[in-house]
Image (cartoon, rainbow over all chains, first blue to last red; front, side, top):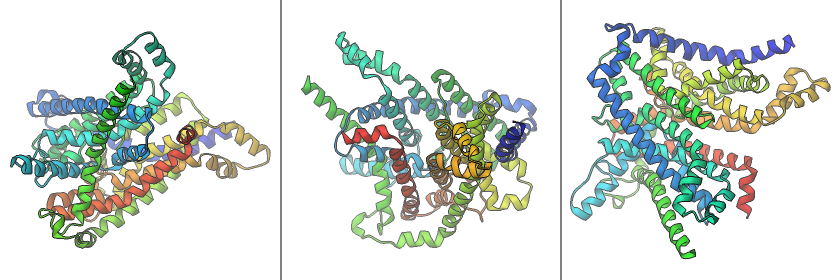
Length: 272
Length: 270
């Protein structure tokens, strides 16, 4: 038995060593650096006490919440439809909707430029129709569009899997008892999808909070938290503040995922 | 009733097609822009592979480095991930549960934080900081949980202990049990994890942007560079190159997912 245990320990060791050396120890260092600046440990409170950082935090949280809500609505409707109906071209549609899963944030940013940038499609259309070239890729609307772009595919697959597991009999029963379509949705379908919506919503929120590439490509003047951290680190060499802010950001995303897991009772992890 | 249903069907279909267009139209546009002589003038300026050629001469190094890192990352994820997934599957306890939770942290925390942490701890080790291995370690900690979860999901669904006992009773050593019984039984999980690891590594930006040096640029780093400083056609052509690399991986992933879920295949048959 002890020989077997030794074997298990040996098999787990390499992964644990790599994790310790290249994640846990660096993170411990990050925490220490966060408290090493002129503000000391108070740097960790700067995210709420310093006006600029607070604005950055609030705008990132609001943007992420709005994106999460919009994504749940859009992906919920499309996912439900795709799982419940079979028609020619459906599989192709599902594939197309999930392909952007693997796009890095920078590419998503470029997709927004393609749609709403200076030479974008939307601008061209409005130019032809009304004679005005509407460009919003570099504003908060562009960020919203980009975050929506990378969030929709993540949520749609989860919704489809959850719809597949819904019990038809419950809906039939509700209908036969005279429930309207809206009541069935509110009282039967949505409660059934709740765990999936909570967990995929949390992933969506956490990914949006930490999204760096999209905002970086769009180079907006809206300082979302990852951009603020990047600027502090690279432009001002303000290592302690950058460290403290990124620890706080990490705590927020981690807490959102942990909370969702408690509420939804399933495993949740953010992606890319 | 049926009329109401069909109206609703059409409305939902149109909505879903709209969502699909939102995701796909910019992809098509960037592909077109990458092969158009002058995007501002439009398609009528003529089609060309000139921009793709320029991307190759400007950024070939990033493509090679990305492939190199993705493959090294895959090897690391296999060597580190499959054994620990096996331990997690065979020894579910509070301790191994904690390991699992810990390994996922690099995914739960933004890549920017992981990258800053690596720089602050190892930035002074010049040789390491300047080499591609610095990016590799970032990719390994980030992708490892995906391999572990994918393999663990498959291993948890089969009775490993019984399979191993049977093999052991026939006199198989642990090494031959591991490679002859455990690995083949977990092959779908390993394959799915491998595809995921390679795809994520090739597309990783948030960690890589902080860790790269002028001599260690990967594709997403080069893409960000081209979007910021090159004309639209070059950025688009470079994006085509990225799509060409990523699409086969995605197709393979979808194919694998379909292979693995018998419920879906039967339903397609109906």
